[in-house]
Image 1: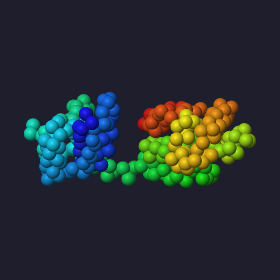
Image 2 (image 1 turned 180 degrees about the horizontal axis):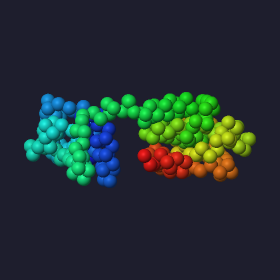
Image 3 (image 1 turned 90 degrees about the vertical axis):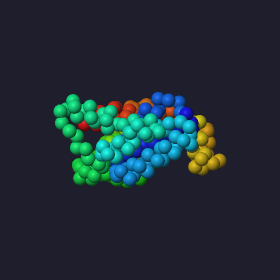
Image 4 (image 1 turned 180 degrees about the vertical axis):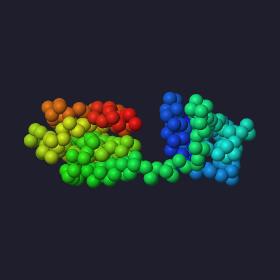
Length: 274
């Protein structure tokens, strides 16, 4: 399995094929080689990818796995035909065509459905959310916190920034994040600018040993990265969030996707319905 190659072939960015394909592959204990081939929207390009798939099959002695999202039938047929040496998973015929039968209508059959995105309100809201999250990263600004959908709290390097950006990019959530620092622990309360927005706050914590490891990569040998300091900060942060009634979870063994979904479920369940 480690020497198996997986192709993601699309007439668009390939993100849909790769996301779906990786969700399926995650069910198997394997680390195959990934090859994304986007914008395959002509017969000539399809033949080039087909040749690459066949060459890979000959070299590895195993059929490459091929996830395709191709709208044009003439382009798709080059990869799904019997002569292709890959195992092709055609997402269009698997999902779109059965839905056409169920709905009783034809799909748009258009290449590059992302071309309309920039004109949609959803896209504009997502860009605005990304800008908001960048402006309010790591406590840079306490302005306009009333506009925030979510405010993430936690010690430095607990995963606040990537979670904020994921919420903005994937869900259009305006997410601010604020570090909890020793001065907050000495005062025994959360940063003052956040007090009026406690209901929007969600905390991230992390295993102290893992936190120390992460911090050592950034500032090796420092007090900031020492295991003693990490244990102190995590303990105090968790105690503060417990006192303040702020929900929190550990990011130690959770993916960004799991963390973001938990936050949406607890603070913005309306965003799980659209």
